[in-house]
Length: 465
Image (cartoon, rainbow, N blue to C red; front, side, top):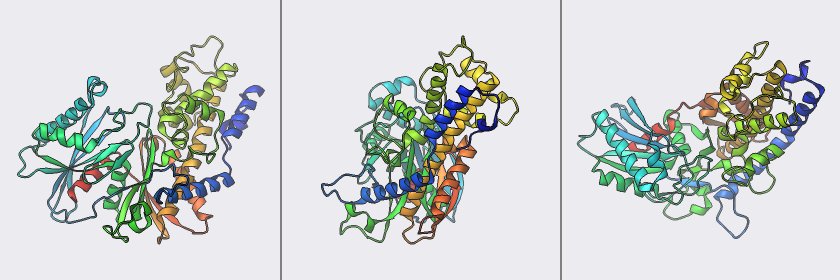
C-alpha cells in the first residue's frame, strides 16, 4: 500500500517507521481478498439454507416479498423513510403520469424533538403520524378521494412477515433509535388510525430493499443494491426456488424475492476478515462488540474513528503535534468524522493547507508540515483498505446474483460515497478486478444512486400494491 508519505523528507525516522508499521497492518493482499470473496459467497448461500442443526449463517438473508412492476398509470403513492437514529423522518409523494412514468415528486424532512426519541416508543410513532398529516396538508393530499398507499422503509435490521408485519431485530449502530423487538408496521398502522389519516400502509422494508426496488424501477436489469452509510448493507434479487428456508407449495419457485443480506455482519464469526489492533479497539469500545465486523471496517460510522485511534497512538508516542498542544477534543471518541477524510485525501496543495485549516477549526490544533503529512497518510491508508474490503464483498454479492447473467447491474449509494468520490472509484475498481480473475468472468454495470432513492423505492413499492 503506497501512501503519500513514502517520498517525503519531512518525516522523522520514528514517524516514518510507525507509518510503515501501520501501512503494513492495513495492507490486504490480493490472495486475502480472494479468500474474503470465497467466504462471503459461501456465507450468502448458507444464509438461504434451511436450519439443519449445523452452524447457522451469520447473515440472516431475510427474504422480502416486494411487488413486481404493475400498471402505475395516474397513481399517487407515499413513502416514509425512518433513519436508524430516528433523528430524521422523510416523507415523500410520487405522482405517476398516464404512461406509468414519474410525473413529479415531493419530499419533506422532519426532525423529531429529542423528547420524542427518549420517551416511550408510542410517542415516536405518534410523531411519525404527525409528520404524515403535515405532509398531506402541505401538499394538498389530505382530501384525497381514496386512502393513499404508504410504503415505509427503515434503516434498522428488520424481520418482515405477512402484510405489514415487520419487527426490528437488532439495535445495530452507535446512535440507533431503540426500537428492538417493536413491530414497526403494526405500531405505525395504529398511529395512523388514531390520527384518522387517509393513508394505508402497504409495506415496511429495510432501506436497502427499498433502494433495490428503486434501482429495478429505474433499470429493469438491476439485480444488486448496496448502501454505504453509517452502516453497510446490501440486497439482491433471488429466485424463490433457491431460498430453501422458504420452500412451500404456495410459492412459485421461478419468481423473485428481494433478499436483505445484512452484509455488515459478515466476518463476525471466525477469522474471515483480517483485523488490526486498532480495529479491535474500536470494536471493543463500540455499542455492540464482536458483531458487525465488516461494517466496522468500511462504514461511515467507523472509518473516522479508526483514523482517530491511529492519531492518538501517534500522539502517545510523541510523534504528532507540539508537546503542549490541546488534544482533548481529538481524544474524544468519534470526534474525527469520516467526512473529514475526503478533503484531507484530496488536498494536493504543497503545504496541505486543508489539513491544517480543518484541525485548527475542529480541534484547536495547529499542525506542522510533518503533522499534516502523517494525518493525510493515515486517512489514505484506512480508506484504501476500506475500498478493497468493500470491493471484495460486492464481488461476492455479484457472483451470488449472477445465476444466469454475465452482466450484473449494481446500484451503489450512501453518504460515504457521496462525500468521497475516490473511495467509490477505488471500491468499484477492486470489485471489477476481483471479478475479472474469477472463473465465472462476470461483468458489472455500476450506477450510483442519489440520496432519497430508498424513499422513492418505498413509494414505488406502495404504488404497486
